[in-house]
Image (cartoon, rainbow, N blue to C red; front, side, top):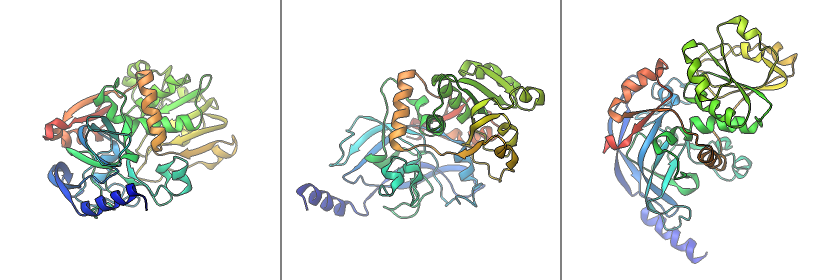
Length: 369
């Protein structure tokens, strides 16, 4: 055993079971809403960084999770502290930490660990870990027991391997949603090689959709935004869409039959995916990134007769998430946000349920101090 390994092992033994108190907002049941709740964070181990949380984005999955709407797929364990779009500043770095030092800007997304050994993890796709990644909240806490607690808190401790660097030039509050909404749309657009000369559709103009439009535009594609709301047309064009189609208008939809190279569907509610499949050209792909609580009917013939592909995607690996943050810095891309105080979170959730936000709530965590 090397001297460094021996030192780390001894340090970990000394820290075993040690915690410190943190403030948070938590849901105690599916109907309780969020309220102040004290939690315990683990004392930083040698490879950990402790982050003072400055901003946390409010993701639609936070709403699904606190209301236990994914009970069949990912049941909620209460108390639940949501939040996986975290930007903050390092206040402590373990003795073996190499990438971060005290005072550095740092970010945490949807994962805080994985088995790091399976083929997917070794390939940089930790989000598809064969043993399941450890999600930032509502996952098994392998250090303290119980479940992990997320970013609706004043502090978090994460292994440096799952912490991202935040480029200095980015607006910190508007960067927070990139850690989920950003990478969730960036990753499939990159994976299916969206590029100049292609026709790309984005379904829905919400927290995910508005980022999809920005990225597809930055990649050089001809971008078509599909929405049920005509009043979103001006915003879609401002964000980078070349065309806007009102999906309830059958005549408008018919004009685009068999013409898309790629469609990214960001809608998380029940909707008719077959209407969009019919718009994809031979060998094209439609990828779902929204998780509907109910199964979606599929017209298989639409796939068969154009050799279309229907796919799914979640977030991205750590390496790709860092790539995305760097891309955003180079292209001046951040989320369109509405800042709130933590005390406004329950009202924000009600508005989010009505799609009444342009286009991502971000909590100023100074309001929790």
